Amino acid sequence: MNVERIKGLKFHKKQDVAIVGAGITTFKRRLNETGKELSYYAAKQALDEAGLSIKDVDMVVMGSAPDAFDGVHMKGEYLLDGSGGSDKPYMRVFVGGGTGVFAPIAGYWHVASGLADVCLVVCEEKMSSCYPHPQSAFKYIWDPILERPLKPNLIWIFALEMRRYMYVNNIKHEDIALVSVKNKANALDHPSAQLAARITVEDVLNSEPMALPVRRLDVSPPSDGASAIMMVASHIARQLTDEPVWVNGVGWALDTTWWTNRDLYFPRYVAEAARMAYKMAHITNPRKEVDVAEPYDPFDYKELHHMEGLGLAKKGEAHILTREGITARDGDLPICPSGGLLGVGNPIAATMGVKVAEIYWQLAYRAGKRQVAKEVTTGIAQAWGDLMQIGTVMVLSNKR
Amino acid sequence: MKMDMDMDVNIKKNYPSYVRGREIKAEDIEEGRVSYNLHKPNIIYSFTAGQAISKFLNGLKEGKLLATECYSCNRTLFPPRIFCEVCFRPIDKWCEVKDSGVVETFSISYIDPDAKPLEKPIIVAVISIDGASPKMGIMHILGEVEPEDVYIGMRVRAVWKPESEREGSITDIMYWKPAEGD
Image (tube, rainbow over all chains, first blue to last red; front, side, top):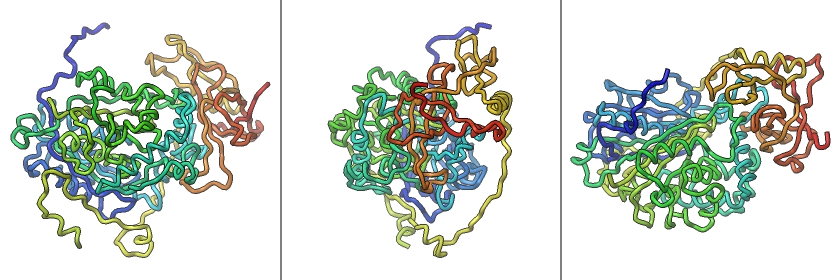
């Protein structure tokens, strides 16, 4: 049957959506606080920054990645009270590493649809509950029949993707290591940072081999932490602040789970997600129109990989922008000014705090020492996850 | 208890205000300096292989690599499935592909699934299979080759377990070895 489609109705929203507050806990390898307590800290900070109380919140979205880390199924329900969701419409979303931007996308649905005027989005991850090391939980990502008998480590897929990316684009490890150097140095100005440091390219190239080409300093650490943002309708935003940050576009897409059937050199899933978000935000030339970006950087090559997927650099050219200092905090296109996952830490879903929340702080000129040098109007946050197959993108702007 | 006192601090409007949480170390748990409960779940799973992969695993016992074909997009799908995820329709035919292929990408792994160091690094690769559609491949192990001699584009061939030892598992192929000039 051929269904009739009406052109131009896509992306119609009931009301505009603004971010008016954000919160983040410290990110550390191990924290004493439970997931609920961490969620409370982050949510409370976001409420305080927005000038709202929990009674003003209509609905709550929780983002949290695999249950295996916390060792609690119904993890959404377990975290309910800490995120302020009790006696409210509440949901948990989860797309692996992509959750950090997917949870705010779900918050956007709540407000843009008109179902809620005030939506609190909280992301939590407590990876250290998995003892002694969360790697033991990561291995359950693999296909139980075709892959687990080969005794894989999660790092393998990234190593395989990194090698393919380097091979097709003829990029040296030295060029990729510069990302790790930049982000860990940026993180020196982030109060949450776990692995802020001044390192050199040689440090990265000489660090312990994990699954070559991936070495220890190419990788972000496992972390505990939480983050939160307040998403509100325009008539609420107007009462709270003169400088709200608007969500102008959202996008998400997944590529096939048969990952050995893809050419890994280019993140098609990110390109698809970005196309959706850019269309919604009326962005036609991202390299010119985007002022600051937080692409997902759990590995140093991933920042470059994702910049290309987001259209911030041509295929195979992201490392040139990095080498020339364009992606530095005082450059023409600052990338990961927060310090990213490599510097601040990687509590999977809670990385919302260094992606969406960081872009919010940058566009609201509240990023303090991390504020980029240039004038900013439009920024993008992006995350990536599952079996390296989902891209989630959010376009933010301080102009509606 | 500095942390707790922070709770009522007024927030400066121009900076993300307070960043809370108390860091602990693994030793704090080992030496009982924090309260905790250690729990070791004992859960056993039996994953059924399903329609397509069961047939594929039975093929491995006979030393064959089986794939499926979709006549709509003209792809030979490997690993095989009973439906084409692009055309979203049933597959049209089962066929055999070769037990040789090309290394699309590879890694030299120094760690096991739990991130513990391996005594001898292993080489893992994505191998696209001859006879399947381009870039259709599987992940597997390389052997009979030194890490420094592996390259992308290298031709490889499966090394099978003796027929009597095959059990219908992906490890019925022990590893893939270089096949230059074969």
